[in-house]
Amino acid sequence: MAKRKTKVKRNPKGGIKKGDKIHGQKKGKKGEAAAYVTRAQALAKLQVPLADFRKLCILKGIYPRDPKKKAHGNDKTYYHQKDIAFLRHEPLLNKFFELKTFMKKFKRLIGRREIKDAKGLEDRKPKYTLHHLVRERYPSFDDAIRDLDDAVSMLALFQSLSADQARDIPVEAISEATRLYQEFQLYVIRAQALRKIFASIKGYYFQAEIMGQQVTWLAPHQFAQELPPEVDFRVMLTFLEFYRALVKFVNFRLYAELGLSYPPKRDVNRDSGSAEVAALEAEMREAGKAQQAQAQQSEKDDAEVATGVVADFGDQSEEALEMQKKLAESNRMKTTFRGLKVFINREVPLRPIYFALLCGGVSEVGWERGASAGSTAGPGSAFPADSEAITHHVVDRPPDSFENRKGREYIQPQWVFDSFNIGCQLPIAPYAPGRAPPPHLSPFVDDQAEGYVPRQREILDRFASEASGQQAATAEGGEGPAKTASQANFEDFGKELKAESKGIWHSEYREQQHEKAAARMAEASKEDGDDSEDEKDEADAPDASMKPAHRPTEEEEEKLRAKALMPKKHKRLLQRIEKGEAKKKAANTALETKRKKLGAK
Image (cartoon, rainbow, N blue to C red):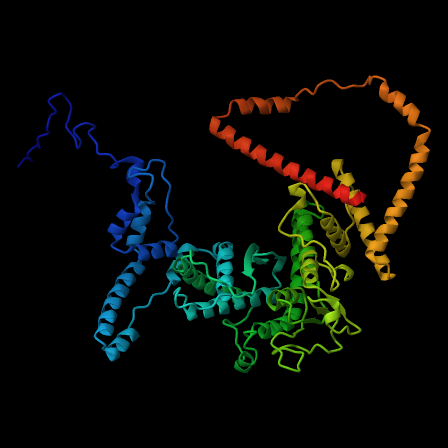
């Protein structure tokens, strides 16, 4: 039997009548507008409250979109349809429904004061894991290492906080974040992977090289933190929950690469004996002893890698030279403090200093923090303050407030960071207690690219080149004056140190230099007095070599023509870029002028 044809409604004015009387198609049902939904529509599709939806998006790595055409208004938050469909098949969604049902039953039992039944129900509380999400978001281990910056920074932040019941910050989250961060630090010490340190107002910036990837994180200062009221810690705890699962996987894999068991074993007596130190320093001490045995093996491996690169690309190729340079820098940092015995006073921040020292090659470190009355060594310290084996003593107080012992150097904490960053031990005199130390420059800033190289950077680079046994390359083009100024600054710095060793105060040395400069200027003015009249006549005469007005080159003309053909949006963007570059150039010029004025005094 033949199918009956459906009648199509005909428009009296002609054409086929569709959904809408006027346009024939409803708005937002086709094209880009139909590919996005608002947050309210997403909540209706998933049947979850806003808090669960936000948590689910954070765990799955789904973020709002910014479509060009906002069909429901500019004040709405939009998500892609595929992302919402992705969430509808998430197993965690069913767990959230089970938790919601559990909370209803639990609150009803508590309201009826059926405590026994409530405890039994609490033991059967639904639980979930995030293991499948870690494997889903990071298919390879390199992907997880690349995304480790935020994870380690979040762990370092929460390990410095305290549990707060009013903010729903549980004790379990703080303790686990502390344990995972300590285990990650232990790996960095064992592998000697730390490359850069910078102390700032926000905290301590660290950068480690792990599996060929640069991992940078920020550890806050160990002070009592005041929790700001405008921060929603529920969102931060959701991020922390995922990062805890991620770092567990990463730590397990990293420890397996070194042939170590995970999690590392702890001595219960040592934990109870060094409660304030939280057993981190005690485990770091064991790691420091074990790292020396691995340092020799790593140096052999690096030498084999360099030999392989030279065999593949040639002795003078860019790849071979770059590989040799990186290996030399990493080896210098690994052996910066090798052979030293360092003691840390109680006023010095123990964690970052200890971490830097062990990554730099120190095997044993003593500290005073947590020491009882009448004792000079804290719990877990390798040796007391009066030990004769100490070579360097880190203090941060005036020199008249502690006893100077012979046979050791007294330094400020900045000496540890600056020495580690350049890979060699700096002179002690500028970092002596009671003196204003040199500027603490960030190793994360490329001064050459910024356009201004501070005097302290030139001095540190000269020390680094001497430590690596490399001579400064011959200057090309405009780099010649900068190299000459660097050498002159280094020589002046050495003369100042020699004068201080002879007992001459810095102010007296400066006055002597000013007097010598004034005498030389007086002699030069006398010599130039005879030629002043000739110079005056030459100045009055018209300059025959006056250059004509500057004409743009072909490249400049091509740039102007391309700029004229640009769209207005791109032209404004280019103007902002040029304005920023001009502003940076003006700031560098001002710094150079200020530096010249200070040097002339």
